[in-house]
Length: 563
Image (cartoon, rainbow, N blue to C red; front, side, top):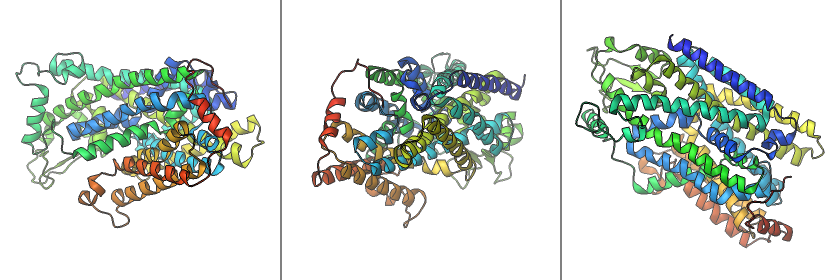
């Protein structure tokens, strides 16, 4: 069977599985919709958390990013996995013990202020919309190549599927759907990695194959890739070019950004006990590590195969996969010297080939000439990764509007049924907005990915940490810190990502810190402003200080209260 036929079969089967699970576990109350009734077992929650986190960016983008940046890409591995250590140790158990539905709910009650709640809602919406637009683009990309439909139509297909099980099932349906999606995406990620590792090195373990010798040759795979890269004028793959300060700040920003992402944090409100929240984080880190330790191997395999396949080759003799990706516009060839050969080199003046790095995971099995069912499996896995995260983000958006704005501020006497309807209508509106940004413009997400992590790092992380561990932190300090952190981060991103406020290049970065790493600076400023303001304003009410003392009492095995 053809790749397209296999893709239709696998995508149809997996989509039907997600829909059936969502229908069987549909939400019947607001508690089901928001936190799955608070009864998800730790293992299932760990699987769902892993699927929630491993978005299209992780599945499709990360290995592609590492394949082009080499050693410098390690900051994303360290930052995105390290964030879960922070979650497990500093946030998850305490937030679960506090017993709220959402991050804005925690901030609103901890800082006894609807203004603090509103600021948190704005942050949650901005971060979540940025992320969910990326997932919609990932869905469109997969549909565009493998089902041969326009990207716009692919995004619409994804919107319909996500809308169905997010609106119907809420957190309860999403949780068990994400368990299935993790199984699909990790299988789809590992199978081609194992195939290619055996094909290139004879080792079935990709993580080991990456450092092994090429079959029939005396040179190691990494040494060969270094040689191929330098021969074409690219930087040596195994050497980094980023300054140490920027590596540190990017890694830290990704870590605290991960620990502050609302769609990740909300997962720890779904387990029965405080102890289960910590277990869930541990399981999630283990399941995430499977993909994240394999991504560098896939990056090496893909980059090596690409360079050997296209460099200085006759354009007319390129395999079928090349023309199919050309049709999507994600690979472009311009024969500048008219010799009919592909000049893929670092020199932009001479270079004739442009490759979108987001396609590397999807194109890798085709470049390696793997069976058609394996190629289609990767497409199904990419959709699972994009849809799982999109659903979690949509839930954050809908609960922020229905629970934190409508229930807590606008109409406190709304019935349980009315709140559930409001949540579903909010999810519907959010899907439409996310779909729009997934299509128009295309570079929206790529240009603002740093903004999502920066906002989470600069706003939520300090407010949550101080809210848990500093009982004298008051509403004035928290609000000032969040607003200042968001403002500084937004200014830096707009200045250096969008060339506003005078713009500037790398040489103009403050202290040599990239926009991707500036979230760390904004976070530090948030901490400083929050603490200084709290020192010169009134202490929190006594009952709030008692709550803070209570959530830090190490009774990890007891039932957590719910509100």
